Image 1: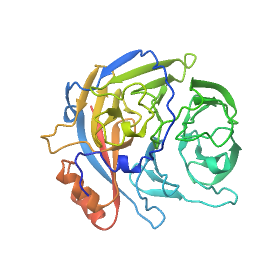
Image 2: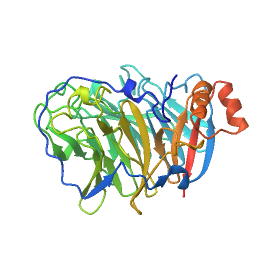
Image 3: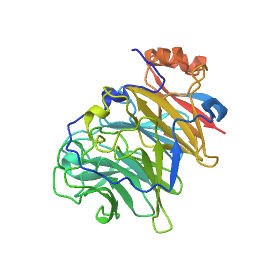
Image 4: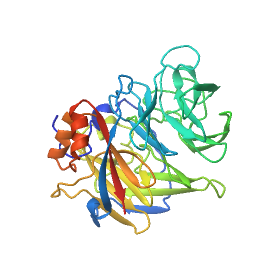
Length: 369
């Protein structure tokens, strides 16, 4: 594997590129603008410690990769959407269970398109059966399913008994009739209460992200390929929305944003590659330029932008999630670990290296100051 930059992690390979019909979209007026081509410092200035957490392994827990990680109640939920599996670990790396129930029976599913956790329940999206499946978060035991009329790409808990669903058209009309909005506010029965970000009839996005939401204590951050930036949707105060624009030196021009050529590396355009992941008052953001990822951390309190120092051998790798103190990366095996170390990943302790050599996997925890 030839890794040009820490964090590339096969992102462009794993993105589904589809043809689209262009429709002009108005960019939302931003409440804040971040200049992404400036450098105020380097990530090692805001990282206190780097720790490894070896993960207990069983035959069921093997993941092809981690597309999304959620931390909730001292638990780590690791999702592999390719295998439609979720592995649950304690914060000490002990495996509690693996949700791996493909099928047509009770409590089974045809896919896990995405998931969230709220209270004592785990919620997963199965678009093939138009359902939200609900499980006990501690045991993985099936509770019930809720029908939904929304073809959903991601889900986030939002308030006491509310959820957000995002529905992103990728290259073709949705499988069934539904309002032409990117985000929907749902009640506890997954019926639509409100809708946000309307789009024109034939609008679509040429790339499919694994996740479109990330969460903080007070908000849900939403981002798609509609524009370079995000919308922070507040959980209180009437569900206010704050928009953030991320300026790039060579952005995709208006009129080209839904064309696959703007993203496949054949142009010099740059674009924000994933929804920001929040930890404390920091946002982790990836920007793609010529098929390579550049990783940044934005300090929302100080309005400062940090990136990896290319001369340093202590770089931050591709982040898949966070908890209240750490940004978190996933290392699936020893070969992948060795390749990342060559390009500047902080070396693991001997216990973790032994575990990786024996076929295990690990999380990398970056403690932020």
